[in-house]
Image 1 (cartoon, rainbow, N blue to C red):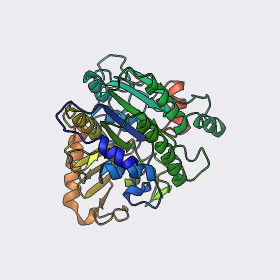
Image 2: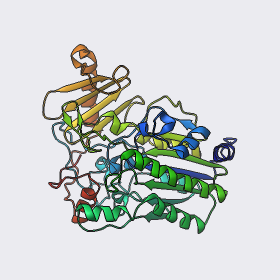
Image 3: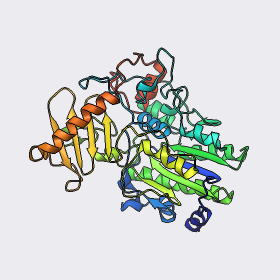
Image 4: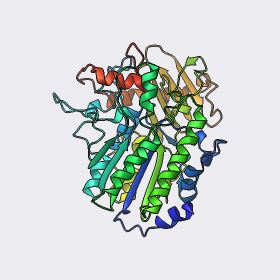
Length: 417
């Protein structure tokens, strides 16, 4: 019954007033190739129900392989960057820089990771008359980093437990499961001041697969069951009527430690291979956008804005068909079928033809020097335009260190992406 309900409730006359409800569902660390709607053998029937009632985007990618960067991009519409103006070194990875928006921080101010001067998706929707509520279970999104900007109600699910030993991390994970997130969402909606709302739900169960001692595919299946529970609740409450649902992920996961001669574990990047970047994106009932076109995390803000009738977000930092991922050790650039990986401190580059080599196994830089040169020139220009050379240096406080280490974004020496 659910696909029919989703399809029927979201048929709109598109007069520009926006739907009554907008629901953004983000599944932390969910790879596109582990969703059955994308051809995966992993069975995700509840995600498939969304896909059957809506529009499936085939070329959606994350702006970065960490939650801080990708969600900052999604909420502000800007490309995250830790460029310093010198491509051989980046901004220091800290609480201030880890959203990738340091170039927008107020000079001399005490800005948060998501600078207060930027317009956010939630602010735009609130100005359009939506009650805005977010329920997040990734500690990197907790206050005071600025992700709550524009939300009338901001719910942080899960305990922040001191210490980074495996036992503490496992205990903490059990306080932030999808079941707990759904319980918080239901409580918030039961006391909602308006039926016209924007609901953002961020689940972290798939990210926590190792902490639960299960396989990655099993974690996806477990989450899918809880997604079904959320959709059934919304349907029973009549909250899927005149609703738009946007379903996506913040980034992917490697699963295999080695790729070519690189040791890339989980979602830590350096460099960013496609399993880290390819994410699902499903919109119910659909949009006017081409589902085969590249859409990045920063484009989702504009997509939701268009669906709500409030506009398409800020002027893009990149051309529509390109992606730049700026990491501490690498710059990754993708345009059309071509993708290049550039080490910051050595004059070496790898070039992949993603049409012929989706698995990124063959370096073809030697046979396509014209592509390498074009990529290099573009990276030089973007490194300058996206740089924050005068960004204030700030040290990570202990709470921030604990959050980053517990979720795997910093090693014990404090080195990040």
